[in-house]
Image (tube, rainbow, N blue to C red; front, top):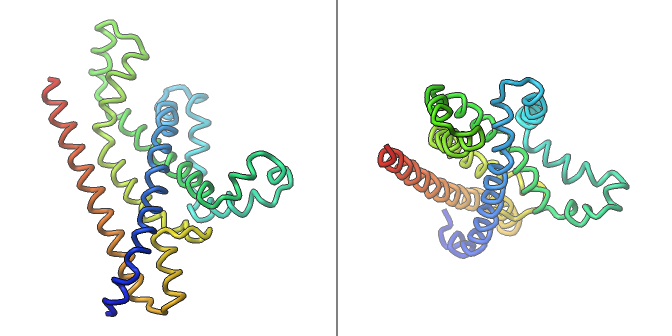
Length: 229
C-alpha cells in the first residue's frame, strides 16, 4: 500500500467528499419536502387521491437511478424544445441534473416510508384528537406528522445512507465527487487499489457520522415524546 501517495492526494479526496455531501444533503432534504405531500396522498382512503402519487412512486422505485440520471442528463438534451428553453442552462449542468434526479428518486422511497408510518399510527390517537375538537389540518400537523416522524425516522436514516452510496453514480455524468475523484486520480497514477481504498474509507467515515447523528436525533425524539406525556 502506497501510503505516501494516499496522503498526497487526500486534499483532492476531501474536495470530492464535500461535493458528495452537497449532493446527498440537497437530495434528501428536498426529497423529504417533496415526499410529505406524496406520502399523505398515498395514505388517503380515496383512490383518486392516491393514484397519481402511486404512479410517480411506481416509476421511480421500479427503474434504476442510473437510468433515470441518463434520461435527465443525456435524454432531455435530444429535444430541440428543451435546448431552446430557459431550462437548458440548468439541464446542461451535471450538478443540477444529478441533484434533481436524486431528489426525485429518493422522494419516492421517502413517500412510501411516510405512508407506512402514517398507517402505523394507532387509530385511537387520531380519534382522540378529533374528539377533542381538533380540525383535520391540526390533527395532521400536530398529531399525525410528528408521530409518523418518530415511527419512520429509522427507515429514513437508512434511505439517507443508501443515497450516500448511490451518489457515486454522479461520477458517470462527469461530477468529481468521491468516486469520480478516485477515478480521475487513478487515471494519473494507476494505483487502483489505493485510491478506491481511500474513497471507501471516506464513505465509511461519512456513514458513521450520519448514523451517529440519526441515533442522537432518535434519542432526542424519544426523550421529547416521554416528556410530552
